[in-house]
Image (cartoon, rainbow, N blue to C red; front, side):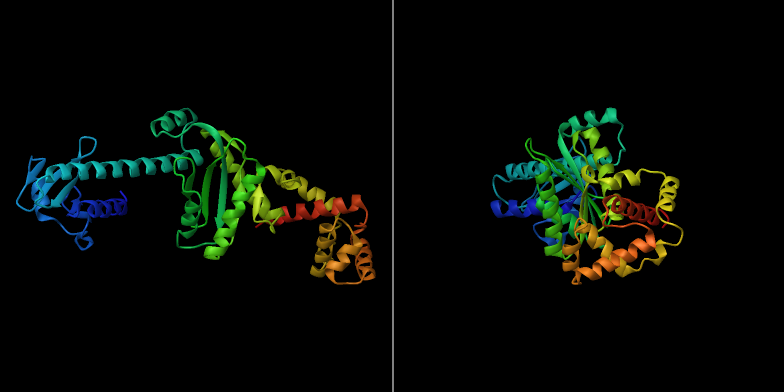
Length: 359
Protein backbone atom coordinates (compact mmCIF):
# COMPACT_ATOMS: atom_id res chain seq x y z
CA UNK A 1 0.00 0.00 0.00
CA UNK A 2 1.29 3.47 -0.85
CA UNK A 3 1.08 5.03 2.60
CA UNK A 4 1.60 8.45 1.06
CA UNK A 5 -1.97 8.12 -0.21
CA UNK A 6 -3.20 7.63 3.36
CA UNK A 7 -1.05 10.52 4.57
CA UNK A 8 -2.57 12.86 2.00
CA UNK A 9 -6.14 11.83 2.92
CA UNK A 10 -5.42 12.19 6.65
CA UNK A 11 -4.12 15.74 6.31
CA UNK A 12 -7.21 16.78 4.35
CA UNK A 13 -9.55 15.22 6.93
CA UNK A 14 -7.73 17.00 9.76
CA UNK A 15 -8.26 20.32 8.01
CA UNK A 16 -12.00 19.54 8.04
CA UNK A 17 -12.48 18.20 11.59
CA UNK A 18 -9.60 19.86 13.45
CA UNK A 19 -8.65 16.73 15.44
CA UNK A 20 -5.45 14.68 15.45
CA UNK A 21 -5.60 11.03 14.48
CA UNK A 22 -3.67 8.29 12.76
CA UNK A 23 -3.73 4.68 11.66
CA UNK A 24 -1.57 1.67 12.42
CA UNK A 25 -1.05 -1.56 10.53
CA UNK A 26 -2.12 -4.93 11.92
CA UNK A 27 0.96 -5.02 14.21
CA UNK A 28 0.35 -1.63 15.83
CA UNK A 29 2.99 0.34 13.90
CA UNK A 30 1.82 3.81 12.88
CA UNK A 31 1.81 4.10 9.08
CA UNK A 32 0.14 7.51 8.71
CA UNK A 33 -0.68 10.28 11.18
CA UNK A 34 -1.51 13.95 11.43
CA UNK A 35 1.70 14.07 13.47
CA UNK A 36 4.19 12.73 10.93
CA UNK A 37 6.92 12.31 13.56
CA UNK A 38 4.94 9.36 14.94
CA UNK A 39 5.07 7.39 11.69
CA UNK A 40 7.10 4.21 12.11
CA UNK A 41 6.66 3.96 15.88
CA UNK A 42 4.46 1.52 17.78
CA UNK A 43 1.21 2.87 19.23
CA UNK A 44 0.98 1.00 22.52
CA UNK A 45 -2.77 1.38 23.03
CA UNK A 46 -3.53 0.21 19.49
CA UNK A 47 -1.15 -2.73 19.94
CA UNK A 48 -3.01 -3.83 23.07
CA UNK A 49 -6.37 -3.23 21.36
CA UNK A 50 -5.37 -5.51 18.47
CA UNK A 51 -4.98 -8.41 20.90
CA UNK A 52 -8.54 -7.95 22.18
CA UNK A 53 -11.82 -9.05 20.63
CA UNK A 54 -13.24 -5.53 20.69
CA UNK A 55 -13.79 -3.62 17.45
CA UNK A 56 -14.26 -0.17 19.04
CA UNK A 57 -13.35 1.41 22.37
CA UNK A 58 -13.69 4.89 23.87
CA UNK A 59 -11.57 6.53 26.56
CA UNK A 60 -11.57 10.05 27.93
CA UNK A 61 -9.32 11.52 25.23
CA UNK A 62 -9.12 8.84 22.55
CA UNK A 63 -11.23 6.42 20.50
CA UNK A 64 -9.78 3.36 18.78
CA UNK A 65 -11.48 1.46 15.98
CA UNK A 66 -10.51 -1.55 13.88
CA UNK A 67 -10.86 -1.11 10.11
CA UNK A 68 -11.96 -4.30 8.37
CA UNK A 69 -11.45 -4.67 4.64
CA UNK A 70 -12.73 -7.87 3.02
CA UNK A 71 -13.51 -9.32 6.48
CA UNK A 72 -9.93 -8.87 7.66
CA UNK A 73 -8.47 -6.37 10.11
CA UNK A 74 -6.04 -4.37 8.01
CA UNK A 75 -5.71 -1.18 10.05
CA UNK A 76 -6.50 0.43 13.38
CA UNK A 77 -7.72 4.02 13.65
CA UNK A 78 -7.02 6.15 16.71
CA UNK A 79 -8.73 9.52 17.09
CA UNK A 80 -7.63 12.01 19.74
CA UNK A 81 -10.77 13.95 20.69
CA UNK A 82 -13.50 14.21 23.31
CA UNK A 83 -16.07 15.45 20.79
CA UNK A 84 -19.59 14.18 21.63
CA UNK A 85 -19.97 12.84 18.07
CA UNK A 86 -16.56 11.21 17.99
CA UNK A 87 -17.95 7.74 17.22
CA UNK A 88 -19.55 9.08 14.03
CA UNK A 89 -16.33 10.93 13.20
CA UNK A 90 -14.36 7.70 13.59
CA UNK A 91 -16.82 5.89 11.33
CA UNK A 92 -16.60 8.58 8.62
CA UNK A 93 -12.80 8.58 8.77
CA UNK A 94 -12.78 4.78 8.50
CA UNK A 95 -15.00 4.90 5.41
CA UNK A 96 -12.72 7.51 3.79
CA UNK A 97 -9.60 5.44 4.46
CA UNK A 98 -11.26 2.23 3.22
CA UNK A 99 -12.22 3.95 -0.03
CA UNK A 100 -8.70 5.36 -0.41
CA UNK A 101 -7.19 1.90 -0.06
CA UNK A 102 -9.69 0.27 -2.40
CA UNK A 103 -9.10 2.99 -5.00
CA UNK A 104 -5.33 2.58 -4.76
CA UNK A 105 -5.52 -1.22 -4.93
CA UNK A 106 -7.81 -1.07 -7.95
CA UNK A 107 -5.52 1.40 -9.68
CA UNK A 108 -2.47 -0.73 -8.92
CA UNK A 109 -4.21 -3.89 -10.09
CA UNK A 110 -5.25 -2.16 -13.31
CA UNK A 111 -1.69 -1.10 -14.09
CA UNK A 112 -0.38 -4.53 -13.19
CA UNK A 113 -3.06 -6.11 -15.38
CA UNK A 114 -2.20 -3.83 -18.33
CA UNK A 115 1.50 -4.62 -17.91
CA UNK A 116 0.77 -8.35 -18.09
CA UNK A 117 -1.45 -7.81 -21.15
CA UNK A 118 1.36 -5.80 -22.73
CA UNK A 119 3.95 -8.51 -22.13
CA UNK A 120 1.62 -11.33 -23.19
CA UNK A 121 1.53 -12.88 -19.71
CA UNK A 122 -2.25 -13.40 -19.71
CA UNK A 123 -4.06 -15.98 -21.81
CA UNK A 124 -6.20 -14.30 -24.51
CA UNK A 125 -9.35 -15.97 -23.14
CA UNK A 126 -8.73 -14.56 -19.65
CA UNK A 127 -8.17 -10.96 -20.74
CA UNK A 128 -11.84 -10.00 -21.17
CA UNK A 129 -12.83 -11.71 -17.88
CA UNK A 130 -10.13 -9.92 -15.87
CA UNK A 131 -10.86 -6.62 -17.64
CA UNK A 132 -14.50 -6.84 -16.62
CA UNK A 133 -13.51 -7.49 -12.98
CA UNK A 134 -11.26 -4.41 -12.96
CA UNK A 135 -13.73 -2.28 -14.96
CA UNK A 136 -11.27 -1.82 -17.81
CA UNK A 137 -12.86 -1.33 -21.22
CA UNK A 138 -12.01 -4.31 -23.42
CA UNK A 139 -12.89 -2.89 -26.83
CA UNK A 140 -11.71 0.49 -28.03
CA UNK A 141 -9.00 2.12 -30.13
CA UNK A 142 -5.61 2.12 -28.41
CA UNK A 143 -2.06 2.76 -29.50
CA UNK A 144 1.21 1.84 -27.78
CA UNK A 145 4.06 4.33 -27.47
CA UNK A 146 7.40 2.83 -26.41
CA UNK A 147 9.50 5.66 -24.95
CA UNK A 148 13.22 4.87 -24.70
CA UNK A 149 15.37 7.35 -22.82
CA UNK A 150 18.96 7.60 -21.71
CA UNK A 151 19.80 5.51 -18.65
CA UNK A 152 18.83 7.22 -15.41
CA UNK A 153 18.43 6.09 -11.82
CA UNK A 154 15.45 8.34 -11.34
CA UNK A 155 11.88 7.82 -12.47
CA UNK A 156 11.50 11.37 -13.73
CA UNK A 157 10.71 10.36 -17.32
CA UNK A 158 7.88 8.16 -16.05
CA UNK A 159 6.57 11.01 -13.88
CA UNK A 160 6.67 13.49 -16.75
CA UNK A 161 4.73 11.16 -19.06
CA UNK A 162 2.21 10.54 -16.29
CA UNK A 163 1.70 14.28 -15.83
CA UNK A 164 1.07 14.67 -19.58
CA UNK A 165 -1.55 11.91 -19.60
CA UNK A 166 -3.18 11.89 -16.14
CA UNK A 167 -6.40 10.08 -17.09
CA UNK A 168 -5.85 6.80 -15.21
CA UNK A 169 -9.17 5.38 -16.40
CA UNK A 170 -8.23 5.54 -20.08
CA UNK A 171 -4.44 5.84 -20.38
CA UNK A 172 -1.83 3.62 -18.73
CA UNK A 173 1.82 4.46 -18.15
CA UNK A 174 3.97 1.41 -17.42
CA UNK A 175 7.60 1.55 -16.30
CA UNK A 176 9.50 -1.43 -17.72
CA UNK A 177 13.05 -0.51 -16.66
CA UNK A 178 15.35 2.51 -16.29
CA UNK A 179 15.25 3.17 -20.04
CA UNK A 180 11.86 2.00 -21.28
CA UNK A 181 8.44 3.41 -20.44
CA UNK A 182 5.24 2.45 -22.21
CA UNK A 183 2.19 4.64 -22.75
CA UNK A 184 -0.98 2.78 -23.71
CA UNK A 185 -3.10 5.61 -25.07
CA UNK A 186 -6.81 5.38 -25.76
CA UNK A 187 -7.67 7.13 -29.01
CA UNK A 188 -10.69 9.24 -29.75
CA UNK A 189 -13.02 8.23 -32.58
CA UNK A 190 -11.66 10.77 -35.06
CA UNK A 191 -8.06 10.79 -33.89
CA UNK A 192 -5.81 10.29 -36.93
CA UNK A 193 -2.16 9.55 -37.58
CA UNK A 194 -1.24 13.23 -37.37
CA UNK A 195 -2.65 13.49 -33.84
CA UNK A 196 -0.88 10.28 -32.81
CA UNK A 197 2.46 11.71 -33.97
CA UNK A 198 1.71 15.05 -32.31
CA UNK A 199 1.44 13.35 -28.90
CA UNK A 200 4.76 11.58 -29.46
CA UNK A 201 6.35 14.94 -30.29
CA UNK A 202 4.93 16.47 -27.11
CA UNK A 203 6.55 13.70 -25.04
CA UNK A 204 9.92 14.15 -26.78
CA UNK A 205 9.88 17.94 -26.41
CA UNK A 206 8.73 17.90 -22.77
CA UNK A 207 11.42 15.42 -21.70
CA UNK A 208 14.00 17.49 -23.53
CA UNK A 209 12.92 20.88 -22.15
CA UNK A 210 12.15 19.89 -18.54
CA UNK A 211 14.70 17.14 -17.87
CA UNK A 212 17.26 17.61 -20.67
CA UNK A 213 16.74 13.93 -21.53
CA UNK A 214 16.96 12.63 -25.08
CA UNK A 215 14.28 10.13 -26.00
CA UNK A 216 13.22 7.98 -28.93
CA UNK A 217 9.65 6.77 -29.42
CA UNK A 218 8.42 3.73 -31.29
CA UNK A 219 4.74 3.85 -32.25
CA UNK A 220 2.93 0.53 -32.59
CA UNK A 221 -0.05 -0.39 -34.73
CA UNK A 222 -3.57 0.45 -33.65
CA UNK A 223 -5.22 -2.07 -31.29
CA UNK A 224 -9.00 -2.48 -31.39
CA UNK A 225 -9.18 -4.62 -28.24
CA UNK A 226 -7.04 -5.44 -25.22
CA UNK A 227 -5.75 -8.67 -26.73
CA UNK A 228 -4.20 -6.61 -29.56
CA UNK A 229 -2.22 -4.40 -27.16
CA UNK A 230 0.62 -6.96 -26.93
CA UNK A 231 0.90 -6.94 -30.73
CA UNK A 232 0.99 -3.14 -30.79
CA UNK A 233 3.80 -3.19 -28.19
CA UNK A 234 5.85 -5.67 -30.25
CA UNK A 235 5.36 -3.48 -33.30
CA UNK A 236 6.58 -0.45 -31.33
CA UNK A 237 9.68 -2.44 -30.33
CA UNK A 238 10.28 -3.39 -33.97
CA UNK A 239 9.84 0.22 -35.06
CA UNK A 240 12.58 1.34 -32.67
CA UNK A 241 14.93 -1.45 -33.79
CA UNK A 242 14.46 -0.71 -37.48
CA UNK A 243 14.58 3.05 -36.91
CA UNK A 244 17.86 2.69 -35.02
CA UNK A 245 19.40 0.86 -37.99
CA UNK A 246 18.07 2.78 -40.97
CA UNK A 247 16.82 6.13 -39.65
CA UNK A 248 19.00 6.94 -36.64
CA UNK A 249 18.44 10.67 -37.23
CA UNK A 250 14.72 10.29 -36.39
CA UNK A 251 13.52 10.20 -32.78
CA UNK A 252 9.95 9.14 -33.65
CA UNK A 253 9.47 5.96 -35.66
CA UNK A 254 6.05 4.64 -36.68
CA UNK A 255 5.68 0.93 -37.45
CA UNK A 256 3.24 1.82 -40.23
CA UNK A 257 5.84 3.96 -42.01
CA UNK A 258 9.07 1.94 -41.99
CA UNK A 259 9.46 1.85 -45.76
CA UNK A 260 12.12 -0.32 -47.32
CA UNK A 261 13.81 -0.78 -43.96
CA UNK A 262 11.03 -3.18 -42.94
CA UNK A 263 11.71 -5.38 -46.00
CA UNK A 264 15.46 -5.52 -45.39
CA UNK A 265 14.97 -6.26 -41.67
CA UNK A 266 12.84 -9.30 -42.52
CA UNK A 267 15.31 -10.77 -45.03
CA UNK A 268 17.70 -13.60 -44.07
CA UNK A 269 21.27 -12.34 -43.58
CA UNK A 270 22.55 -14.82 -46.18
CA UNK A 271 20.45 -13.14 -48.88
CA UNK A 272 21.57 -9.71 -47.71
CA UNK A 273 25.24 -10.70 -48.01
CA UNK A 274 24.65 -12.12 -51.48
CA UNK A 275 23.02 -8.86 -52.59
CA UNK A 276 25.82 -6.76 -51.08
CA UNK A 277 28.50 -8.85 -52.83
CA UNK A 278 26.57 -8.48 -56.08
CA UNK A 279 26.47 -4.67 -55.86
CA UNK A 280 29.98 -4.01 -54.52
CA UNK A 281 33.15 -5.84 -55.43
CA UNK A 282 35.26 -7.04 -52.52
CA UNK A 283 37.11 -4.18 -50.79
CA UNK A 284 35.24 -1.40 -52.60
CA UNK A 285 33.31 -0.15 -49.56
CA UNK A 286 36.51 0.15 -47.51
CA UNK A 287 37.96 2.60 -50.07
CA UNK A 288 35.10 5.11 -49.61
CA UNK A 289 36.21 7.70 -47.03
CA UNK A 290 33.94 9.56 -44.58
CA UNK A 291 33.91 12.80 -46.60
CA UNK A 292 32.71 10.93 -49.66
CA UNK A 293 29.99 9.19 -47.63
CA UNK A 294 28.76 12.58 -46.35
CA UNK A 295 28.61 13.79 -49.95
CA UNK A 296 26.60 10.73 -51.00
CA UNK A 297 24.19 11.10 -48.09
CA UNK A 298 23.58 14.78 -48.82
CA UNK A 299 23.13 14.00 -52.53
CA UNK A 300 20.39 11.49 -51.69
CA UNK A 301 18.74 13.88 -49.22
CA UNK A 302 18.43 16.43 -52.03
CA UNK A 303 16.87 13.97 -54.49
CA UNK A 304 20.01 13.75 -56.69
CA UNK A 305 19.98 17.53 -57.27
CA UNK A 306 23.58 18.58 -57.96
CA UNK A 307 23.05 22.34 -57.53
CA UNK A 308 21.21 22.09 -54.19
CA UNK A 309 23.68 19.53 -52.82
CA UNK A 310 26.71 21.65 -53.68
CA UNK A 311 25.03 24.66 -52.09
CA UNK A 312 24.37 22.81 -48.82
CA UNK A 313 27.90 21.37 -48.77
CA UNK A 314 29.37 24.85 -49.44
CA UNK A 315 31.36 23.57 -52.41
CA UNK A 316 31.49 24.50 -56.09
CA UNK A 317 29.20 22.57 -58.41
CA UNK A 318 32.20 21.29 -60.37
CA UNK A 319 33.74 19.97 -57.14
CA UNK A 320 30.63 17.90 -56.49
CA UNK A 321 30.66 16.62 -60.09
CA UNK A 322 34.29 15.62 -59.61
CA UNK A 323 33.40 13.70 -56.42
CA UNK A 324 30.52 11.92 -58.15
CA UNK A 325 32.86 10.94 -61.01
CA UNK A 326 35.31 9.60 -58.44
CA UNK A 327 32.54 7.53 -56.82
CA UNK A 328 31.62 6.13 -60.23
CA UNK A 329 35.22 5.03 -60.81
CA UNK A 330 35.39 3.31 -57.42
CA UNK A 331 31.97 1.61 -57.41
CA UNK A 332 31.07 1.42 -61.09
CA UNK A 333 27.80 3.27 -60.36
CA UNK A 334 26.82 6.75 -61.49
CA UNK A 335 24.69 8.15 -58.67
CA UNK A 336 23.23 10.75 -61.01
CA UNK A 337 21.32 7.90 -62.66
CA UNK A 338 18.18 6.83 -60.81
CA UNK A 339 18.75 3.06 -61.12
CA UNK A 340 22.34 3.25 -59.88
CA UNK A 341 21.30 5.55 -57.04
CA UNK A 342 18.60 3.09 -55.96
CA UNK A 343 21.06 0.18 -55.99
CA UNK A 344 23.60 2.13 -53.97
CA UNK A 345 21.03 3.39 -51.43
CA UNK A 346 19.57 -0.07 -50.80
CA UNK A 347 23.04 -1.61 -50.60
CA UNK A 348 24.10 0.87 -47.92
CA UNK A 349 20.94 0.10 -45.95
CA UNK A 350 21.68 -3.62 -46.22
CA UNK A 351 25.22 -2.98 -44.97
CA UNK A 352 23.86 -1.03 -41.98
CA UNK A 353 21.57 -3.97 -41.19
CA UNK A 354 24.40 -6.53 -41.40
CA UNK A 355 26.66 -4.34 -39.26
CA UNK A 356 23.94 -4.16 -36.59
CA UNK A 357 23.30 -7.92 -36.68
CA UNK A 358 27.01 -8.71 -36.32
CA UNK A 359 27.38 -6.61 -33.14
